[in-house]
Image (cartoon, rainbow, N blue to C red; front, side, top):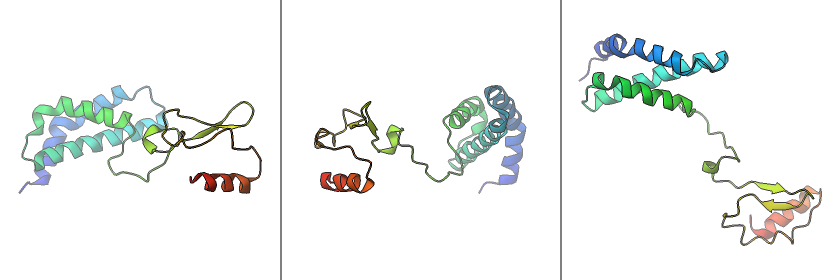
Length: 144
């Protein structure tokens, strides 16, 4: 069984100040509103990595430099240790959504040519109208 008080003190002695210094260097160009949160998130990720290694029976002291690198990348990729509600971004390919654009004349056309649903949709047959009920009806007819 691990004594977390001793391990936390060891973390502070070995990695905490190095993590703070690396975070200040890595995020010095960020806006000051985001900088403090980024530093805090990085310290939290370092402790998370440190504690998980200890639980697996490994000694994280020799890997501090690598752990700092991964903590920086974790924050830069906008990850959160505590998680958050999933914000779906229709522009992000990982969301699994396809966004339909309107061309210069206002006609809909598929955004991604490789989307497998595009082969089933006859885009010339879709009529442009400002009535949302007609759009919903056309969407139901297409099975979307």
